[in-house]
Image (cartoon, rainbow, N blue to C red; front, side, top):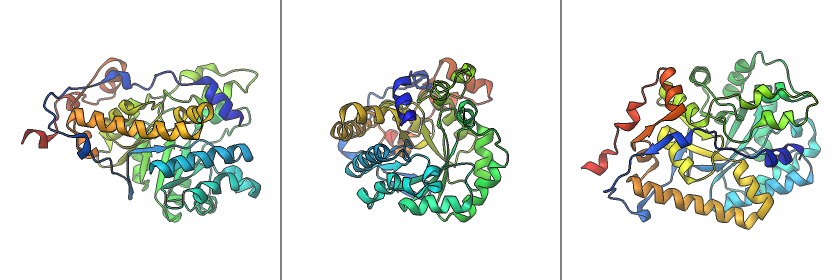
Length: 349
């Protein structure tokens, strides 16, 4: 609950890089809103839309149980996926399990992601998956958060080997995600090579866990507050290196335009967390459902304007990169002209 309070107070500041991305307008999109198809795939899983509620909470007793219950009901009603927060507290203390188990109780047929950190063992991973009958397991990477956290970990050796073992034995697809500092192309390749199903950018520009943990310290490590790879950059780096891998966009996603830009840069799905949590806490469950439906409606409108009938089409729509995002990617050896010169072939037949 302390993390939730600080997450809401620190907010989000549009540092995700998406303001550097501009779609090339299509005056003859040859498309209709009624024909838009939002179905997408995350590894082996099929989702009815690219939007899902990303990992936030659990393990904080009755208060986090109620939050997860509301999030899961919203996911069920809008037919989108849902990830729970780290389940390590429930792995260590059975009394905390109800705050996670509630998501499957109220969303019996939905797509649910379990969640643990990279310190987890195979046995703990299996327990987390079974706890919510999860369709996949998220393994989160949060080195900077742990370093800033007063009681956090200080040893991160062996993480890749542990993840590889989980991938081989857990029995469901494994998604590896950052928690707000972004994943670069080299890390993505290491994860892909050990069989990770999908990689979630978790980029800089959303909830800032360095600021959250610094607010809990006596001596602040303020240099980490501005540390990380912006979400737009992380998605593009990973997709450029792993063109056939499943990439998930998250980190400061605030609206349908951010979702559309994430997909156009190479993401197959997009997670929202802090923005949706704020609506739930400040306005309630009903307005949260309304907002999710409005976001999905807006995404269909944007896809119509671009002439993109499907998520696959949206990945081929032309766009122009500018500013610091363009500079970063150019310095990292990625040719950004490829985005501006592509087109959705079906619109020109």
